[in-house]
Length: 385
Image 1: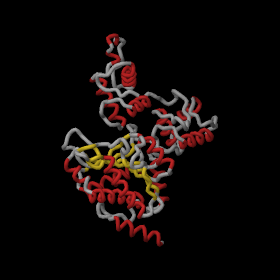
Image 2: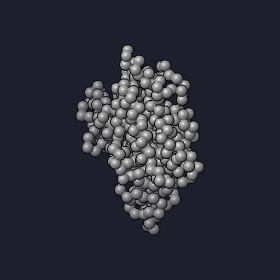
Image 3: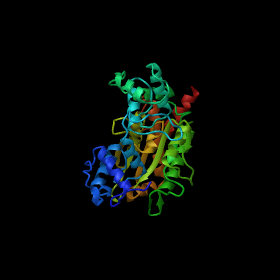
Image 4: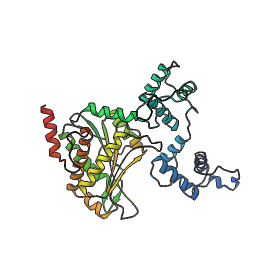
């Protein structure tokens, strides 16, 4: 689709204005748009788009690109307004799917992470609900199913069923890293170099960092998979689907940042989370571990963790984290990142964070004190046992 920004006009802008009005971020049109103002992307529309993006965990740039347009479309769907079903080739998404997933979870059915995408796990949960409550078992959420969903009281109230299920999966996986399958996702690549400053290309730095992390993970017995080749650049959905197809236990996306201000610097981590309060609990935990390890080990400014609904986080079935490791537009951060020994420190910090996730607090050590040698020794003892 065409990217829309301030100053643009036409029917596509009119559609965006109408959607923003429908969800309460712009006044309803008064019918006096004969002068063309109803098709103009003006300051009011830009501010409304920014407000919507902030609510939805998107990049707050005031521009309507494919991701923002998809989120605007999804926000217009209410549960019961259309039938919902699992379509392999074109998955259905929207707020109505999110509400269905949350409702099934409340009733005790494992619909997976509530991410607003109708996938196979949502269909299985829906069929189980239909079977248990004596309605047509077709895996389609139509009028009959919606009525039943609304009539029943939640079985799981005041708890976090997704959290409990995710924690149980990690507990069963055990504290050892051996056998864990991790997808490492170096951002950009191929014809997309990412941020380029003073001859330094983001894609090249991330490829090198990913290979360093891959080597350390393989040394501990993990199966580390790269989401792209050195000369390729899959889009976010392709990277997420790769992780799903490979049955990944974790997905780690590596990036550097840029800002118009040369003073912007630091490290930040992102996990899946929505305005409705749903989140990938293990993704949030993993983001926290990575953030603390890197801030302590590198001395970079701690820009904390944040929930986002980016496709790279939303579409992965396993816990996923995106890490923005410094700003290439900041001289200090850039000088650190071009130093291979600094990238070794970052790789070790991320590895230690992964180890912490599976330790579940047992035999843990203070942030910044675990070393790669400690992890190797721990894994060798576990292998011997």
